[in-house]
Length: 335
Image (tube, rainbow, N blue to C red):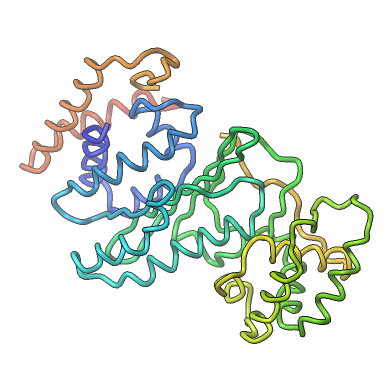
């Protein structure tokens, strides 16, 4: 799978600039199709983790660092900044913009978009020049379901407002706190104002909603008063100028943002969006035998054809790559 990933990446980089490969990675449908071509289960959460792992290893084997990768599942996700710094030392580029993008995308998808899926996988693919794509995945344990979040640097104008190129999920949730939605702008404005108020005033507002009927979509029972007060002191002292600055304060997470959003909604009448932004989303078969078992002979042949085409292209003979491109056009929709 690493060999096939490498062949596909090399073939694409012969035809397109690195930014085009990042753009395709940021498309949930294309990424899903890539995973299926590599033979992973089309419906499994494992497609994300294994496809990104195969791509990461394949990219590390390229002779030139056109595209780099960091992150992964669990502890590997937490090591992303260290990996980026290590790659920056090796290939001489500024790691800070990539590290900032990595941290911010993870914070947004855990604190501003609260859909019940806990982020456990985070990977960033990037160029030394600072272009990047993020692919991260969250799991809803009680449902045994996952959803995947895609970002692309060229599409992000405001990382706190509808920054995703797509969110792939098997299920639409009935209630999701989506503070990245345009419909949540007023709610976010009041969250920011509340974060700059004296803690005593905000705690008073918060205490009022504790006794309200449980008709509201969000519950405050899991917000410990001492943690809430400590977070309010931090934000009051820092005086964040925008939601981005508020998010990046250490210790400010999903529960704190949810509590302030609840106050903004029920006390000040600024409702956020509760609509789920997720979208519903086999060349060699799949390892789960769907739609049929992997045919390793055909799989090996595909790799060999791609590897020969890439070698010839590097020597100046691009006819085989042109033939593969023509073949894909013949079988494309509407051909």
